[in-house]
Image (tube, rainbow, N blue to C red; front, side):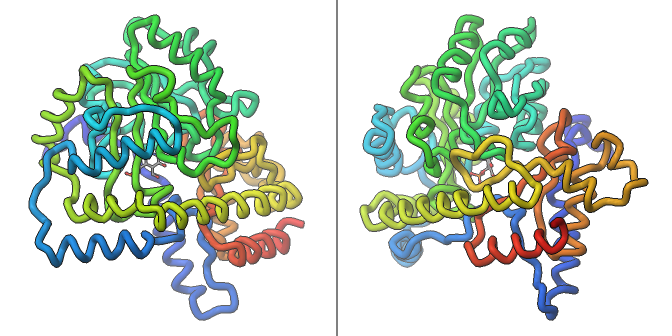
Length: 405
Ligand SMILES: Cc1ncc(COP(=O)(O)O)c(C=O)c1O
């Protein structure tokens, strides 16, 4: 069967390959004294709070399971709008909020609505791998710009200005970012957006981890800057609802009708049951649970990141949000991997990929190598997820110590 050029452009998702190997090793390790510890997972280890679960059950029992409007339940859009006002102090009219099947559908809608064939989108290297594929599926081209630790692994206004070309349509950013957990400084973001706006481009900002922000400097929505910015968000991370497949997209007023029409055709609507459940996320009881969990994520970061540094796995920029630690494993690679191997030659090749396999095989510790997240310097880095309990993180540190120190 002939496969479309579009489908053939899709790059492998290496993390998934890694996860398959982790599952195989986990089966072998299951009965041992060292069952697999998963620090590779990009989703909260918590599930939806009781009120949210009850709301889902009630929606099913009451038969409220028909399609909703393509843009989502009006009362959910209102609740999200209030949340922006209460939590972030920004006014976002419900009309501009389009509820979607996770941030993934929001990103796809944004790309399909804004990109023509050949349009280029600037994004940092490293960044969330799927973004390149969303751009490519819309016939655009992702332009990866290497981002350094001094830049918090994010784009800067200067770099955007330098990279801007005849075909550039805009920037795609995430703040806080996956894989680094680092945010763009608000002043830098203002400058980036100014560069973009002056060139008639569009700023797409993935704020899926914004709810899980730990520093006052960074925990602000970009929607306060300009109502022309597109913001992507989700119930997956802060609201602990990954598998419910619910997110949203905030668009400029002028784009609402276009995105609505596309959402009608492409998705009809996001899951109705998930939407009814999500209404309960904003009840004071649920919000109190989410805030307690945010504090737990922060406590894990505060404990784990210094431990990594002490093990020779420094995290060059302390994550200010999300649940990731982007650690430099170059010194640890030299220690752990055979001296003759290619990955020792200035980390040009396998590097963190091989290192991750060694950790999996020898310590039964699953982590994510940098490879998926970009091309520039990703053999040097490994992503740890702290979406796991403190006792599990402590056990992981013990296993790393036994191997590396
Ligand atoms: C930066 C980023 N954006 C989007 C997504 C997709 O999230 P969702 O589950 O809402 O589709 C993820 C998932 O890990 C992510 O890390």
